[in-house]
Length: 385
Image (cartoon, rainbow, N blue to C red; front, side, top):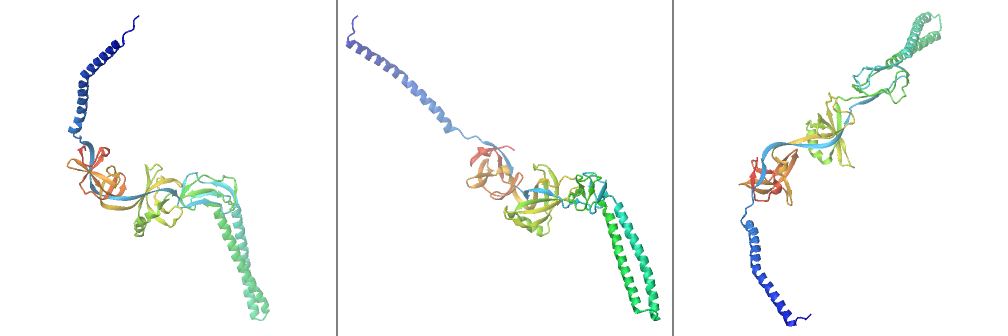
């Protein structure tokens, strides 16, 4: 096998390079032209396209009264709660109430065996009758002794002794009358009655047990539930709004809502404000009174409270969704001539889905309420009502 000469291999290499160069030169102008055309197509819309109008929802700035409501967490509290205890000792022979029953003041709740107290009453009455008879006899003797002494038939000492006997019997009659009154009082106490209007709780003692006046547990607990109170706390700064109106005699309305704050349970008015601020929390307690005919409020129940502290009259209001927050504070988009313009505003009171505006807009201005996330200052808008 013969080896190729070196000059022949060099010729072949040079020929291959030349062919490759020709092929590249033939295709390169077309590739460059194609790439340039793509770039021109992408750049052309950027130069010629106009931004489309942003669809938005709007609302008109209006004037309305804006209530100032203060919210708090409160606890339902009964005006009066009484533990009914026996005032005399004895066996409980009757319970006249049903657990959970509503009672009136003076209704009979229970009966303690009255026979021992009836016997004491009869004994006291008998003692009184005996002493009254002795007093009548002593007074007759005193008259006779005075007659005899006037005739100088007896000594003065006998008259004086009889006068003392009469006075002793008169004092004994007073003691007897006190014993009668005490026996009648005990007989009255044997009949246990309701001291207040309210609702009785669970029975604490059963019939047949011996109860005593020293027993602190009692027979039953009565809670007054109509009317009923709610105690709640407000920040001390709220006193600047609340106190002047209370001192002026205003009856501030209060609404009590359930734990979720969805259902209104009752409506009432502020009764009073506590006389000191809790320094540990910076709050002050208030008490409101509610009519509770339907018993919607229950003692020790937790409720959400809304207090109508005041009402701002004839305020500029916008939907709360129209107010946005930016680096310079609150602002709204005002629609003018088909464009949304940024307008800085000063926000007042928020009530539900409405916000009062203190400065920055005028009545009848149109503000954007929906679609603000796609807006820029001066952007064209498509108003959709």
